[in-house]
Length: 110
Ligand SMILES: [Zn+2]
Image (cartoon, rainbow, N blue to C red):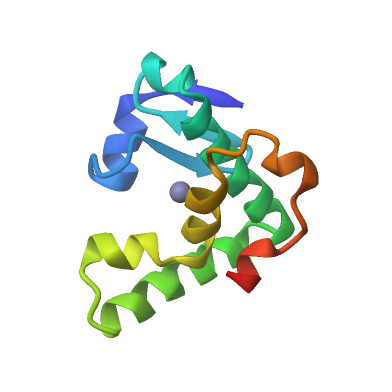
């Protein structure tokens, strides 16, 4: 379910992101984002990852990946792009058919 709410984005990401996905919701900053198929596909990939990780484990691994990356000397931006779930989402966001033939836990092999 897609919701447009700039306040949620601001609270949860400090204006860093234009979208955030917390199953079953995709929160977008503005209506223009809702008509961006690549952005929406990126967030739908996160929905799939969250479901297969039973939600809780997605957030744990997401946070641990980020912390590990920062401890390895990456700045916050690079650390974010190297979170395993983000690597999959960015690698395949432009493939709008990706979710129909995606292998489960594909992020694990990236
Ligand atoms: Zn993402």
